[in-house]
Amino acid sequence: MTEFANKVVLVTGAAGALGQAVVEHFATRGAKLAQLDVVEIDNGHYSATCDLTDTTSTTSAVANVVAELGTIDVLANIAGGFKMGEAVHETTAETWDFLMGLNAESVLNMARAVVPQMLTQGGGKIVNIGAGAGLSGTPQMGAYSASKSVVIRLTEAMAGELRAQNINVNCILPSIIDTPRNRADMPDADFSSWVTPAAMAEVVGFLASDAAAPIHGAALPVTGLS
Image (cartoon, rainbow, N blue to C red; front, side, top):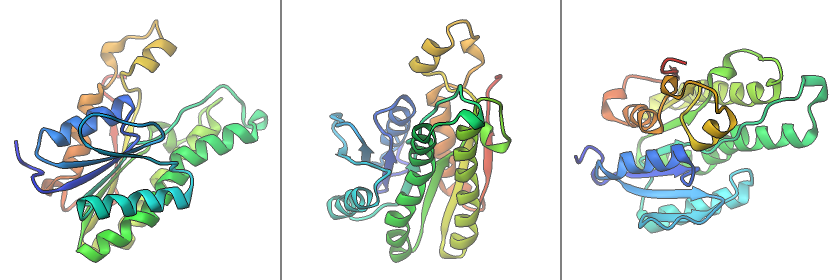
């Protein structure tokens, strides 16, 4: 398949289970891949280490992607983190900073670095990963819910700001993704009800495709049977 032939797709959090699935999805459809993560990736595609919570690190990494590959047609903001267990009044600064940094600030930093490039080239697609938990507060998940709510609000604001410039910005709201980490954390769950990384990658691919051209600011639930 060549749906994304000659397109450059930048994937953050590319070393994770979902990130790997997203990279594979676009690679099999002809895209040129650029991967950003805090760890090194050696899979034949362009990759660079990057602290997405640091503006300087992010800006430098994105500039290197453009220098190497020429453009960024699709940004898939896959990087994120999860932590729960604390009531709001017990939430530590460490927990708050970790979740806001990895889930929300990473999206903001990537927007600062990538959107000017997309404006210069005349368009692009941005897909963010929110969460169903970002739609309402959940006990013992206040900080996580807040961080993912920020992703949704940033998505909506960016969509309104950029739609007239031929840039689509949308986000996906998964429930539980079937990853090794989630299986280890919830060994008694019914894994068959969860959404696989490959299925999630298909949704990312759709929002990055020409078929999604009329869609702006969507927060799309992807919950499987969970």
